[in-house]
Amino acid sequence: MKLSVVIPSYKDPILHKTIDSLLESSKLGDELEIIVVLDGYWPEQLIKDDKRIKIIHLGRNRGMRGAINAGVAVSKGEYIMRTDEHCMFAKGYDVTLIKNCAPNWIVTPRRFFLDPNEWKVMDIDPIDYERLEIQEVSKGIRKFAGVPWISRTKERKSRNIDGTMAMQGSCWIMPHKWWDDIIGELDTERYGPLYQDSHEMVFKTWKAGGRFMVNKHTWFAHKHRSFPRSHADGTKENPSIRKECWAHSLKVWGDYYTKEIRPRWKI
Image (tube, rainbow, N blue to C red; front, side, top):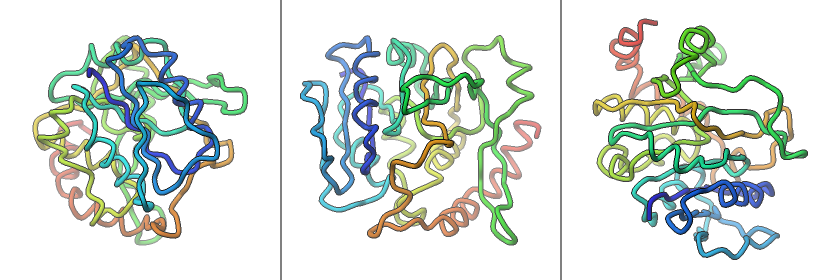
């Protein structure tokens, strides 16, 4: 198996279109497996019957982080990819991403914006680079956040594979061995069930001497925020505990970011 795509899912009806796009746009054939992690629910519409699809049903809702961990744990691919359940993919996304992924890299594709009603890419400039910042959300509350890095986008538009600092977290790929050796699994105990997963992985990667990259040779389109939320932002079993998650992430990585990462990136 070359690539395992993990989709953590909770009650998003666009899941089925996402699966279709992954299958129809793939060039790997039987070397692709799609692992759909149903996070404590069963969808009203049955997931299509395709030998490349594996379904994991979690008996209780664990939250996004736990669902990703569960999917990766059973994956067999040399590479693992994670995607949200409301995305569209370029033709040959899988081959292109695998071809350009070094042993110590995490890679995200160029990100476009998806109109889920028309199921088409919106006429909005894509996101290539994001700068990692500590933002003040409200008085006394801060968090790590990725923001569009306009200057780098302009300066490095001719570089198709390049380093970046942050991502939305909705689509990434890495060698399975890198996950096993460096990421281990996403911390659900201290970070909680949601949020800051991309920052946790990128910090662990930098700390281990790896790189976080954007690949502009291919793309995915993520549902634009102007459309209604069709997936869970916390559940009764796993409520959204953003403040605690943000605070823990800053506690663990704040000094490293300030003293080492910002000077390294000259920001």
